[in-house]
Image (cartoon, rainbow, N blue to C red):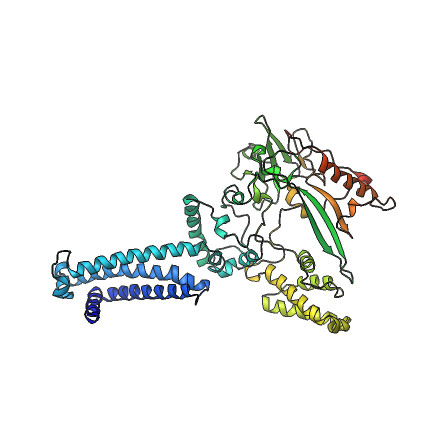
Length: 532
C-alpha cells in the first residue's frame, strides 16, 4: 500500500512539474516544507537555539514555500500556452486515469489537491504564527540586522530592562501599534539592504509609542515613590583611587501631581507640561509651558536661543511640540552608554576592578580613551598599556597583584567593548542622558536662568529643587548629615543642605498653579554649590 501511495505521489508531482518553472516550484515547495519540519524538530529537542536558524526557519523557508506554490500554476499556464491544449486535455495527458476517475467525493486528483491545499493552509498558518512570535523576541531584534543593531543589542543585554522585550517599548500593544511598526519596519529593511542608514543611529526615535502606552504599563503614575536615596561613588586618580561620594535624596514623588517640587510632578496628567525642542535631539528647549488649574497656560521662553517664528510662538504652532512624558528625561533607560570615567568608577564599585592596585583608576581611564579601528587591536592595546605601565614604573605590582590586575584588564576590555562600536561610529558617550543635569543637559534644558516668563522671572533652578544633597564629593556618603565643623570652608554649605533636607522631609506638601515655584537660589558666599 505504501508503494502504491508513493507511486501516486510521484505521478502527481511529475504532473505538476510540466515545465522547468513548475519543476522548480515543486522542488522549492517540497524542500521548504521538509526543512521547516526538520528545523522545528531540532528546535523542540533543543538541538538548535541560534537566532540565525530562526531567521531561516521562520522567514526564509515560508517565503520560499509560497514562491514555489506560485510557480506551479505559472508553470501550468505556460505549458497550456505552449501546447495550445485545454486544461482538461492536459490533465488527461499528464495524470493517469486512476487519478482522474470520478468518485462520490471527487476524483483522487481532486482529493489530493484539496488535502494538500488544507496542509498548505495549516503549514502557512503555523509558519506565520511562529514567524510573528520569533520577530517579537529580543534575539531577533538584536541579531537580524547584526551590524546595525549590535551596539543596541550589547547595551540592552546589560541594562535594567534586559528582561523586557524590545517590542514592549518599541512597538506597544494592539493592532494599530503592530501595523505602524511593520510599516516602519519596511523602511528599515530597505535602509539596511541598500546601506542607507545613519551611523550612529539618530536619537530620539520619533515614532515610539507614547510613554503612557508603554512605560506606564509597569511604572504606573499613581505609584508613590516618595524620596529615594542614591549614592554615586567617584574615585580619584591618586595612588589609592580614593573614593568620593555624592549622595542625593531624590524627591521622586508620584505622577499624580499632589506636591510641587517632585520629579514625577512633570508627567502628572493634572500638570500637563509641553515644550518645543530647540533641535532634533531635544538637547535644547525653546519654550516650556504648564497648564494651570483654570485651564490657562504659563509659558517660559529661553531668552538665549534664536527668536521663534510666528507659527512656533503659538501653543500648537509646530508639529514638534511635545507633551512631556517619561522619555523626555529617561531617554537612555535601556541602551545606556557611559563615558570612561563613569564606567571605571562603576566597575570599581562593583568589585570588578580592585582599587588596591596602585593608580588603577587613572591608568584604566587613560587606556580607555584610546581610539582603535576594531575590538581586537583595542583589547590588545588596553592590555599592553596597563601591563606595560606597571612593568616600567612599578614592576612589583605585577607580582603582588598579578591575578587582580588580569581581572581588572578583562573588566576594562569589557567596558570598551560595551561602549565602543567603530562600525557604527559609536564612540564615547554618543547619546547624552537627560537624567540629572550633566553639561547643561537634562533638567537644565528648562531649569536655567535664561528660561523666563513674560515678566522676566526665571524658571526655578535651585540645586535642591528636585533633590536634597547629603554629600558632595565627600569622603563619607552622608557627610552633610553630621555635625557642622565651623572651621571648615564648607560649613555654610553643610548647614544649609542639612537644614534643607530636614525641612523637605517634614514640611507639608502644597499644590501650585505655576511651574514648580521655589525660593530663589542662595547666591554669593552662602551658595551651597555650583550646578554640577
